[in-house]
Length: 172
Length: 203
Ligand SMILES: [Zn+2]
Image (cartoon, rainbow over all chains, first blue to last red; front, side, top):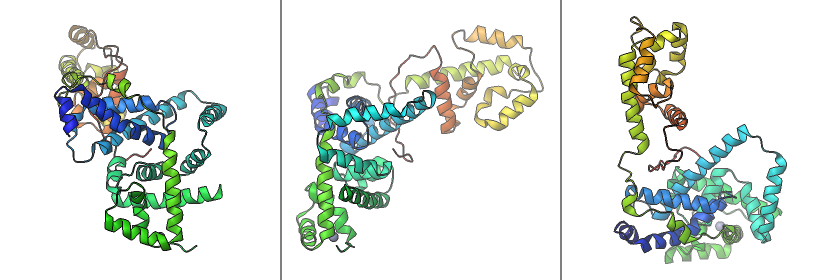
């Protein structure tokens, strides 16, 4: 809360420190959740929204958990908008393939590619829970806050997810 | 390989990776790991997944910070957003239409149409349910509309919704917002200062 208060008091460097502290985690969460394009823009929007409503952040959760919640909300909005635009303008299957193919070329690490594929095998909620837990190190309580669920449900999702990912990585 | 039944330990493995365990817990997990092949495998999977998280693009902190307005210029979340002010204005305007126009809107659509619409969309009915027994002449609609609110496009649904925005269901609010997005009088882009948390949805 100290940095937040300093920013409220007009210290611009406090914003730089806050963004610097959390921006990569937000980018990783977006990438892990399956976002491929515009992750920087998404992170940007998350911070703009967060700073605009900082007064509603009471410190009950950690700032990072709160930021994840905002980012997740934005991702959902994006996907809804994408779904709507897909309904009006049908996208050729080949467009998807070439788009992903180009991105695959950028991801050189074979292990990363395997992990990404294994995450693709999860349900959206399993994937969120699993990556927040494993890549971000959030507790089950924090995860429940971010995804709007319960701790118990988060634990179940985690167990199912690791089972699936383990089998997938073994088979590869 | 034996299946591990210690779900407590399994659930703590990510914390071991993130060095988030207290000493006692860490020792307990490590002691278990020494004898449990299944958890050793789990830990290896978790290591792989954790290290693969680096494929996210690196974020330019300065360019993000540049987009954040200083604290004073940000509309506090407690202040009413511009959209709400527009809605309030529309409430006043639509009430004026109802009062001045009387039942003339109903007169334009026939009675069965109005009642069918009422049964289908209960939240949209405020402005369309004036006293049907005393319809006023149709020209009063034109008079009140041109006299009261020349810049508002004809949009009876949104006007009707606006008359009772507080009591609307989520779906109706979404429809109102969508309708209002089509208004020429509104700015093309508008910050939405209130963060709403979606609790039931999943990605
Ligand atoms: Zn075990």
